[in-house]
Amino acid sequence: RVLAHELLCPQGGPSCEYYLVLAQTHILKKDFAKAEEYLQQAAQMDYLNPNVWGLKGHLYFLSGNHSEAKACYERTISFVMDASEMHFIFLRLGLIYLEEKELEELTEAEDALSEANALNNYNAEVWAYLALVCLKVGRQLEAEQAYKYMIKLKLKDEALLAEIHTLQETVGFGNPSF
Image 1 (cartoon, one colour):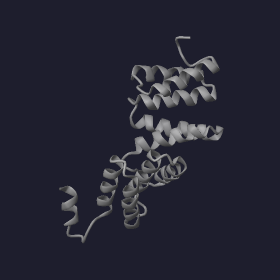
Image 2 (cartoon, helix red, strand yellow):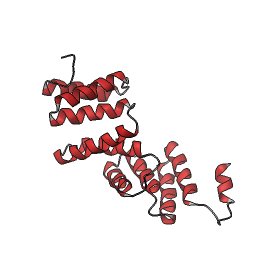
Image 3 (cartoon, one colour):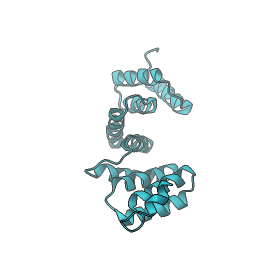
Image 4 (tube, helix red, strand yellow):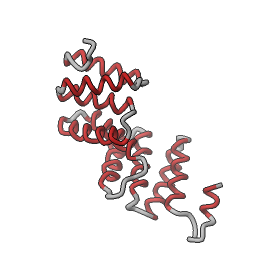
């Protein structure tokens, strides 16, 4: 109903927000081709809208194209105005940086994850990725603190937890119960 109402708006047709909502709907239905079409239309209407680039990043991230997602997320955070879902943008950008495993990217990963953590410090997944970064750069105290918060907030991602435990065993720290 809301989308139909938007079509009847006096400004003369669909707005950028209309196409963003349609794109989000198709992303949720995993119809990535249709979502990309609507995002292209939104970008044509408002190329400098951070929500367009953030949603494009989510589209590429969910479809497995992390290099394109990274470019879109980096563009999103370069805008003066924030996109509406900055928490997820920083979280996913941090994950991409961690996957790339380049040392200079670890600093950027930590910055992105710290920003995501500042926006919502009750997310166990953010704490888990922060623990991974701290383990990889050798910061024992921070790794253990992030690990404690991750456990307290009950991380549900078993694969991520297993990756952390493996790295903790490799480096010999990061788990206060050692």
